Amino acid sequence: MRRPGSAGVVLGALVLAGLCLMALSAPWVAPQPPDRQDLAHRFEGPTGAHPLGRDDLGRDVLSRLLWGARISLTVGFLVVFVSGAAGALAGTFAGYSGGWPDTLLMAMVDLLLGFPGVLLAIALVSVLGPRLENLILALSVIGWVTYARVARSQAQRLRGLEFVAAARSLGGPPARILFHHVVPNLLGPLTVQAALGLGGAILAEAGLSFLGLGVPPPAPSWGSMIQGGSQNLLDAPHLAIAPGVALFLAVLGAQALGDGLQRRQVDVRGGTRRRGDDR
Amino acid sequence: MTPYLVRRVALAVPLLFGIATVIFLLIHFIPGDPVEVMLGPGAGPGDVADLRHRLGLDRPLASQYAAYLGGLVSGDLGMSLRYRDPVASLIFERFPATILLAAASMLIALAVSFPAGIAAAIKPGGPFDRATALGSALALSIPSIWLGPLLILAFSIHLDWLPVSGFDTPLAVVLPASTLAVSIAALLTRMVRGSMSEEMAAAYLQAARSRGLSRRAAAVRHALRNALPPVLAATALQMGSLLTGAILTETIFAWPGLGRLLVQGIAHRDYPLVQGCVLAFATTYIALNLAADLCMAVLDPRVAA
Image: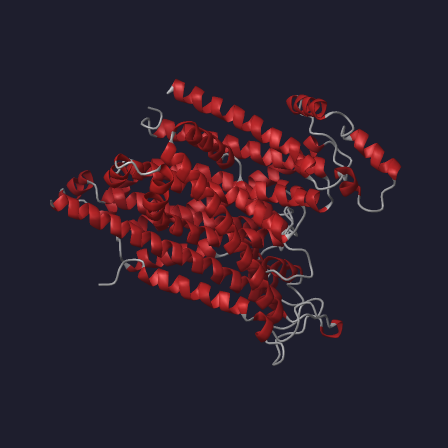
């Protein structure tokens, strides 16, 4: 029997894999360098040599789309990695140890959740300057909180379970118990969060790039391409379409993967509960 | 109820104070000399010294902080470098447009999500339920920065039904509000559907059905009332995200609100204006979250217990 959420997991993974392949193959597949201008052919519609047309500076839209995938996906994956690692470490430690580390973490979480995250990212990037590393930093500063909450609640739950108590009573050192018994059991819920967070990070990067707070020009990113296209809707409506479709697919893929993984987890837990009821 | 109310309001005060402090420090995070960054490369030493003095950046940090907090208490957020007007008056001028946009978006989101969520929950697994689930997933994934231009392309450029941008006619709010409403509507539809489904499976509803009530009548007369509190709380919480979502939507549609003012402030390195706008957004966000929690406590007294 097929597990619930399988279709979403497969669809999401396929879409994301396709987009990653697109990003990786940019140097070989892109018809020309993404910043090569040809002012004589500004706003040219799709042709055989330029299947997605040319933008306001005569640059090839397909080439920019492929190279832009690198920036959007790099930011997405790095933000998930940095914020996921930081949040998981802080949350696991606080949840497992309790006491003042837990109180301190929750105070920080409450402070950050009380502040609109997007606004904090906008404020940080506008102050630090629009650069790739600042973008990743700003989105990670707002992103780690969710992972910390998930890891904390799971670590608190695991701390009270028999197998962890048994490891403690056998005299296992705390670090060993954490990394051998607690962390492996956190990976499932954190993976779901990472998949859902990937879509959010890609979307946030595009939003910041749209506002001119992304990677500075002439480097292409999907958000800045949509911004350029939306400025020229009358002359060249095709410019906003392709980067929008790519962005939509990336977010949809991450969302489908996250939802599918979540449904699988709920199913596993539900199954456990049902077996418990039968006894 | 009263102790909960006092505790919840008391929690918001240190949060506001913390946020005001972070916003104060923001200008000091600017790499290099913030005044030179604000004035750009062509500024002379006299201009730099003058602006440094006007912003109070030539004073010790503690004195700057005390003056900043004093200003906040008296409603003085400093002067905008670009507009040469008090930041507070610029914010008050633009704020109603943002509130109008957020309120119109919420109305659209509620008008779509409640009927759709209830209808989906009445026949779980049916064609409408499946279509709603698919529609919600697509709506949650569609970026507003893309949806906005697509709506302009369809309804303003091709069909010529609605204005592209601006604030001149009541019709001008339709496209920005719809753009902003889409993801909220999808989220609320999922919530209404989930909350209603739980109630539809409850024993009291089975009893109502066994007395001969149709699923639809049982849903509307009995389940809806109990399904409402969590959905209303989520609705109030979404008002906060509508505000920040407005930053992008206002930029797409040249809507003269607080979000556009913030983006203009960033583009012109007008940091007093940026600080003021961020503070205004954050304060409104906290106030809305507080209102949502208090509404929830009134609707469901177990929350305040």
